[in-house]
Structures are given as C-alpha cells and as structure tokens.
Image (tube, rainbow, N blue to C red; front, side, top):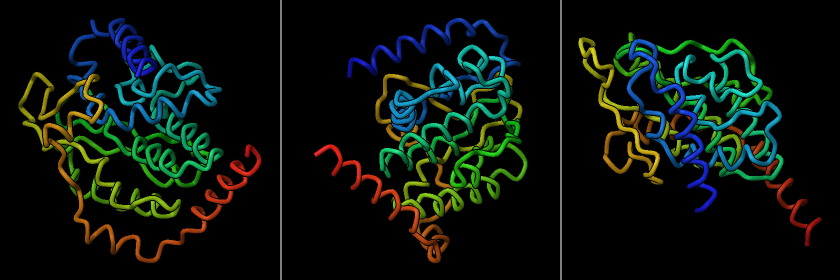
Length: 244
C-alpha cells in the first residue's frame, strides 16, 4: 500500500498546483470517484509510459487542470484515451485480462467539465488498440441526450470487455452519477471525490447510476467473439512457461 499512498500524495501535490483555478474552468472534483480503476491504470502505466503521463487522474480533469500532469501529451482532449490505450497495451502484453478490463472501464469514465450539464470534448485521435478506439467517455448525466449516449457507451464497453474474455457486466462500473441541477452555479452536481476510498466513493456511497440492465448487457454481447481473450491467454501461458 506504500506505493499507493505515495502516489496519492504526489497527485494531491500536483492537483494543488491547479486548485486555484476559477470554478468556471473546472467542475467540482469527481475524478477520484472510481478509485479502483484509477489505481489499476496507475499500476499498469508503471510498466511502460513513453508519454510520461504523471498520473491517470489527469485524464479525468478538464483541460486546464489536466495540462499539469499530461507529460508529452499535447492534445488534452485525448489524454484520457491515450492513458487508457497505453495501460491496455501494457496489460495485453502481460496477458492481464483484469488489467485490460480496467483500462477499458477507465476510458469510459466521465471527465470533469466546467458546469453541470456540460459535455466533455470528444477525442479525435484513434487509439492503437481497437478495443479502446471503440469506446468514449461518459457524458455529464444532465447534458443533452445523456441517458441514451451513456447507455450506448456502456453496451459498447460491455462488448469490448467480452471480446477480451472479461466479465461484460463490469461495464456497469463505468457509470456516473444522477443528473445534477442545471441551475446549480457551484458545478457540484451529485458527485463525490475521495482519493482515500480504495473501493471508490461512487460505489461505497451508492451514488452510481447504472446505464443499462444486466439483461441488456447479456443481450448486447450475445454474438461477441472471444478470440482476443484466447490470444491474451496464450500470451500469459507463454510468459509463465518462459519464466518457470
């Protein structure tokens, strides 16, 4: 747990550098709502991080705040995608299905925006992994057409998780909060933010709103091939044999 504590302190320091930004530039924090996925992606990045991204949490911030930890990434609209893509690549090389699943979930998490109801910008780059390229981030639940948009994202995420041999129901973990009040000038919405809750405050405080039912996910993945999962298993088996 020491490395996690150090990481939290380091990120807290970096976030402190941008905490003075006016509220119009940054939504009230929610970037630590899904801490298990953040922690998993953080660990995966340690294996190989050519873009020198300082921490995955920066991919969930608005661009003004994200710049402080983006490393070599200059297209801040794509920082979340590039972080997830590298984490997925590292997990795939290790034959780590759980790691790939967490990278996919991270890619689908909502980013902070400037106010309740404001959707985040879409990344226009293409991920190197087609599984990551197939999905995008959740949008503020109070933004236009958010329910349909976020449901489509979850169902596509479930398909990608199924394709690597993961549990497609885990896609529901990417969900966000109940819609906030558009007239709320504090930009808070119905969020939580707790870097010290290793289980994720959105889960422990029962704030997660699931975008689809378990049956809808089962139906969505009914025809998905798991060939990619077999390949990942083969990589893991070969790695284990080489090191035994």
